[in-house]
Length: 273
Image 1: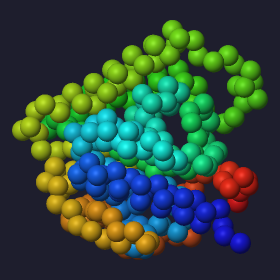
Image 2 (image 1 turned 60 degrees about the vertical axis):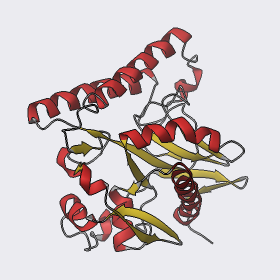
Image 3 (image 1 turned 90 degrees about the horizontal axis):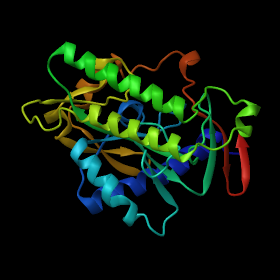
C-alpha cells in the first residue's frame, strides 16, 4: 500500500505539471527553490521525506501569473490561492491547490481553502543598505503577524474555534487593507532597477540564505524532477552551498521528518500516516 507521502507526491506532481504549463503558456520563467531545488539536484525529484514543493518567480512575472492564470485554470480542478482570491488566506505568497483533495496541516489551523498544494513565491528587490533591509523585514513581519492573527491562524485546533462567528465585513476590510500594505512593503524597491538583488521575503531560512543576484535567477537550466523536466538556476551549486553547506550529504535519520501534512482526503478516502 502506498505511504501517505507517496500519495501526496503524486498529486503534487500534477500541481507542478499544471504550474509549468501555465508558465509556458504565459512565457514566464520560473525556478525551483529551497528543498525542491535540493531534491531536484540530490534526488532527481522529491526529497523522500519532504512533502512540499517550492517554486519562485521574479516579482513582475509573479504578478503576471496571478493576473492571467485564473482564466487559464477555468474548467480545471486547480485553484490559484492568493490573499485576494481567498479572503481567509493570510500568507504573502500564492499556492496552486488541487481542488479534488482536502488536507489538514501540522501546526497550521485556519479557515482558508484546503487542498494539496505547491507554494509559489515572489522574489522582490531589496536595498543594499543592511539597516534598510532590517527595516523592510521588520515591517513585513509585523504586518504578516497582524494578518495571521486577524484571520485566526493557530498552531493547534481548539473546539471553541468552530463556535466563532465568521469575520464581519468590517473585519475583512481591515484585513484586506493590511494585505495591501504588506504588498506595498514587499514591493517598495521594485521600481529601482539599479538594485540587483532580490529576496524571498517569506523565506523560512535565515535572511541571506534566499537573497539572490537577479542574474542568478535569469540563467536557468532544465533538470529532471521525477518524470517531469523543471527549470533551476544554472548556478544551483552556489545557491545550495549557500543554503545547506555540503548539500549532497544526507542529514541524520532523526532529521528526515520535514512533513507538513498529517491528514489527506482524496478519492473519497481519508489517508493518515
